[in-house]
Figure 1 (spheres, rainbow, N blue to C red):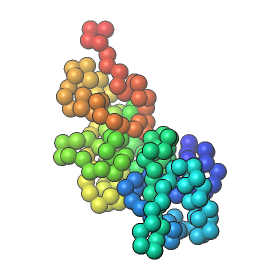
Figure 2 (figure 1 turned 90 degrees about the vertical axis):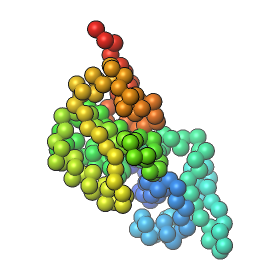
Figure 3 (figure 1 turned 180 degrees about the vertical axis):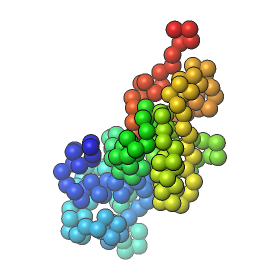
Length: 199
């Protein structure tokens, strides 16, 4: 299965990128990082220097501690975030359990979900299109909700219903199409493409 480890050789760096991109608003000091990713402090320090030097992370002195956080102005911030979202956490689980979950055409995470920003009550965070095995999906989403400590707003459509609602410019679907997203399964172009009526 495609993974961040295909691109990044350092295991410690992969774990650190996953930690920071799964908690985009958090700041960590060195010992915190070593506890979270269960790696040696010297290896963590070495990777922090590399990520700081590359501009992926930034640091800030607070009291007697140096804290590290993501540099959201880093040139490849969004691309790295998308890779991590697909290769870790819920994205990784969905891709790994794809056959068990049914015949999935599209799986989309909203931009807010990816950034860890709680949605408004009517906002969809995860959209799944396909012939879905609902009990399997519900079990997976319950697991994610437990991990996040909150409910996840998700919606499921058959491909036919999704296409029909896109063609009719259904406000619910249009709202999803106009907002930022990360495609975990399926093509961005096919997801957003709208069939012209009568063709």
